[in-house]
Length: 417
Ligand code: NIG
Ligand code: FE
Image (cartoon, rainbow, N blue to C red; front, top):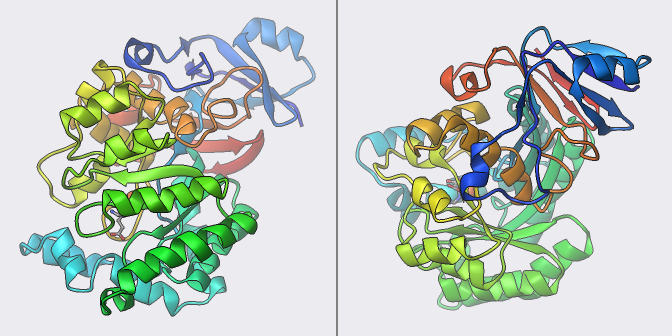
């Protein structure tokens, strides 16, 4: 059914080139007043003055935006949404002074989610994932990248990726699956002298080729961090992913600097994510590359860290900066993407416009989808979000609130309040 979105206080198009925005390109989100958006065949076909569109598309069904703000659906390019139980216990441990990586060394953290996920059926995990993805959608998100990474055996990783594929056919959200078999060194591999090498060999020779052959992931990712995977191990794993035809992402310099950003650039990764401890050399490398710097301020906030990623330096030196939730049970259990925009403004010192572009166009670029979604412009997929506010700057302003009233994916109603 062709649709005409009318009566919005603002239509925020984020329109421009179909690639990540950088530097001063992030100062203009394309705010239109008195504008309408026409949608047909799942794509945006026309954006412009409401009067003209009313005439040109007289037979399109009207969607009354009720004086709200219409934006591209938010693109959350980094989540770990397939998991079992919440880890509220660890939040208390951290409050009592235990560090995130220390909890992991004691067998908690990612290991706790691995034990839990291995014990659950695919059906159980699918039910949990669907409910959680609907929560993400309820805040205005229309595209979500979802990583595996709490299985860490071939079977449990395939199980997690099948859950993502299953969820994609149930929830009205564009899902992008990423293989994160290198999320941790599994405890059983840590327990034997050659367990580590054997697990990496399993990743390279068996897990990655199988995942690619079954078409279950578009990207592969590695947690490159002291205590998890080294730079050399990450390179070895992601080289194998490349050879298997997968795109490449990296958890880089999250808590301690280790050259992760530089490695991401060297590998031509689509994105380098976290970057809370990125060095100056890492910033320069990203600024000179096409790799998107994906910042996840919810994570460092939730972990109680004082330092956030140097977003201002990244934007000002010309890196392509995206924002995402990192939705996961250990370090960022929020489905609320607009809250991440709040942190983008108040902690990372981005403008509201920069934060919005980081969560739309640049999020899409971080998934290789810059030509598909993230903009309200003719030819793009009709992924839209409607918010109850008069000015898009209120999106990061009403922090923690849920102002989203409805979303559409491929022109079809996806979520409504
Ligand atoms: O992005 N740091 C690695 N992975 C996740 C956390 C996963 C977890 O603690 O369960 C992250 O922060
Ligand atoms: Fe993550």
